[in-house]
Length: 368
Image (tube, rainbow, N blue to C red; front, side, top):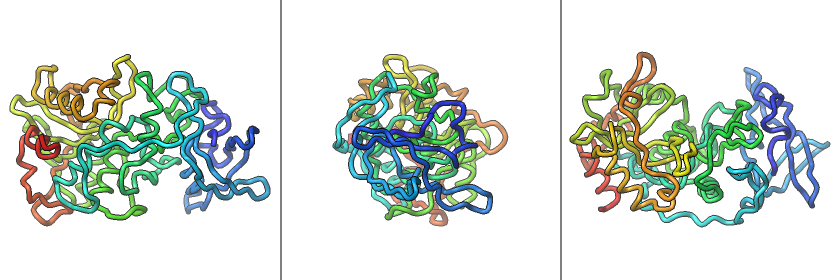
């Protein structure tokens, strides 16, 4: 599969997606075919089941009836994909060995500690893709964020790229950014809400294919509170964040690992942080919120990213974010949700994680 015909051109936008055509390379010849868009809902929106299974550079057996693709079956790992530097076709390994995870969660174990352990699984090998974890049509959760376990697609994509990867190339035809308003690269990585959606699904479920949790970042915490998962804290985050708190700020959502003694905060999130070559790539990582790199949170983030995720650390230094941006929740849907671990919510806290320091939480998870 080579992608949507005309990808990145002004004519190929979400408004025209029912009429898209799709490129396939077969026996050395390129075929451009329309595709069955699936079932239309009451609002006139299709569900695009085939588009939500297609991934650029992967090999498929396709079925076409009267020149329209009606079914696709994935046969192999990537054979040709877009590189960050050039946007050209590139042969990649057919198999990507899954990484040895320093921390693993257990699907369906509804404790705060397991929520944080699960949140560590995509760290260090999942790049930031705007719209990553959302479905192809940008309406809800992709299959990858409703599946138990980290996606091999994220690992493969990470290993195909290098420190020059950028999530938003200024040339739309060569970019992984959804300039057209639909998510061509939904499968390749995670954005901030895609990451949170995957963590929640894998904490609360034991089987794949259920209802997803991906949603708008700025309203993410408040929407979970509305489901009875926790309570919204009073305005202002300087009073101290607990491990596990979910924080929605304008355009972003992240997980707190707690407030350090100097007031800095260790966090988990997917963000397009700068690489060592100055490119905005990044992805799922342990980060810090503080005034400078001398803060305790940055020391902890740098230690664990460098020690436990060396392949990532070769490309990306630990990311420090400023308190003014990350600890400010303007009026509206933003804010901080504190998990209800009393037994009346969806998570419990038998280990007492919610009252631990960030250093204690990290030692508990990593064993050192």
